[in-house]
Image 1: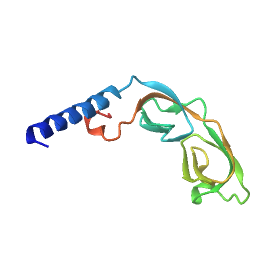
Image 2: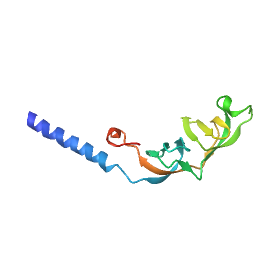
Image 3: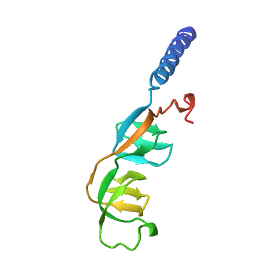
Image 4: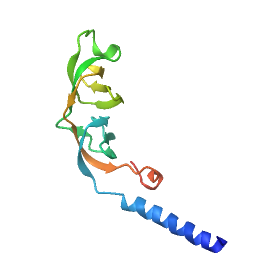
Length: 137
């Protein structure tokens, strides 16, 4: 390949990549999030098929997880698994174990089924590979 042709191809690919990043910047949306962190903050994260940053936080509804035991000393002296509402965080540790953080009861490791989702607002899709082009705060 001649140097001039290579430069044109490189310039075209670079232009396409940058325009793809720019085209991915969406208007803020409300998302129903099966996995989330920092629900009670203005920098909540939401994971669906995509990853979002939600400046409006998450409220209204949250995941309810079953089979939960304290993950550390923050959960009290529970020995029997309980059901918890995860109003701060719900994330997957392994395919069979989820982490649930409750503002009232602390952090739990949950092995049972879960239901529901967090409703998060002012969400913008995270742009992997383009994050330096988009101000996040």
